[in-house]
Length: 313
Image (cartoon, rainbow, N blue to C red; front, side, top):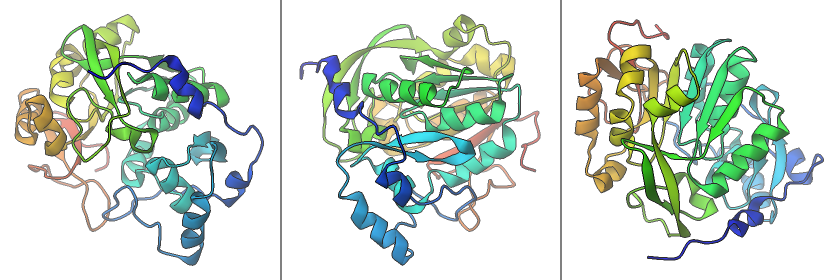
């Protein structure tokens, strides 16, 4: 087993220019609307300005701050694929965030499981407002540090950061941490793609039911879950939350990642059915949620309690 790296690992990403940097001026304007067939990296060579931003992006060596959606200020990290997408095209998960923009209302509670750099948490915090709550759950020390900077930098008092991995039991787990460029690939299993290992960490593991109880949440409206193959275990540790609160779920459904944790897309869909959920996808032609439930092959799906009307209809 590779030895853990010290906390100084975070020092490589902790510097962010405080003022409006050159990167902030050059970055694409943040945009939010559905994009048909969007995947990370889409639309980065559609125009001459995007082509020039791709060239400029390669020159940055230090993190810098940009204006993002909802008046938020976020840090972009050279080499990171999500940061590049935002800088070059102005888009990051536009279909999913467009859906959340329609669903999340002031006073709601949003749980971000596998928060990564916290972009969904920040966006959710703006939408649920001061009367609402956001719980951002992230096990990686490096990414948790980034989330903390984002929370503090935007003065968000309605976001709570839980440094843990969500699974079906309380204890410890080993987290494989990818290089910052591929931070979204961090996993408790094995990398689903050809991703290099940066280091390993021993992290706290928790059940989502326990997080809800410990945080004193009286309502859970929406859960976003992107945890690189641990989704089945996480759902099994959230049975009380799902049965008691009936939240909408926005989830990654990646068979490639699930199989590394003794699961599969079919098993995950079956489990959602057992919990009384119908599963919807995003229409490739429009980027909008589908109107009818289906056995989805998409990697991002929406699960809605069967007794509820999908909020986008």
